[in-house]
Amino acid sequence: MPSVPPSTLDYSAIADEIRAGGARATPVRIRALSLLRAAAAPVSHAEMEAAIKDAFGADSLDRVTLYRVLDWLVAAGFAYKTVDAQRLTRFAPVIQGAHGDHTHFRCDGCGRVVCLDSPLPAAPALPEGFRLAGVAVDVHGYCDHCPGTKP
Image (tube, rainbow, N blue to C red):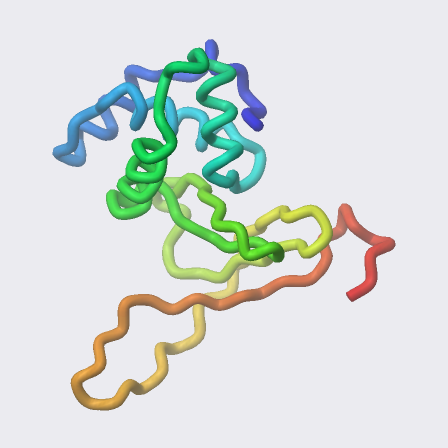
């Protein structure tokens, strides 16, 4: 999963970022965010679990803790969730200053996710008393690495 070896990641800088947000920089939070940033594409819970166990040892975490950490990374603004063509939730890092409101293109062939420069469409008008929690736009097709694949 990681495109950068775990030994080359700057764990102290990531711990400082987490603390700057007023949170505890636990080993699992640091490891998960480090590996998420090193990944070449959005990763699933299972892929993250395998990567952490490979990099830090088989007994380095339990599944429930990792689910909570990934959800915390999203809530804290360090990561975002996306759903792939198989309806599998994947996580990707938020690049500070570069990941505002915009759409993503998801390749149905290889699962690659690319940020698009187009803004999200306007939020729909809701009935009185309703509160909008978010807007998800699913832009998908086939990327330039999957030229022979037809929809």
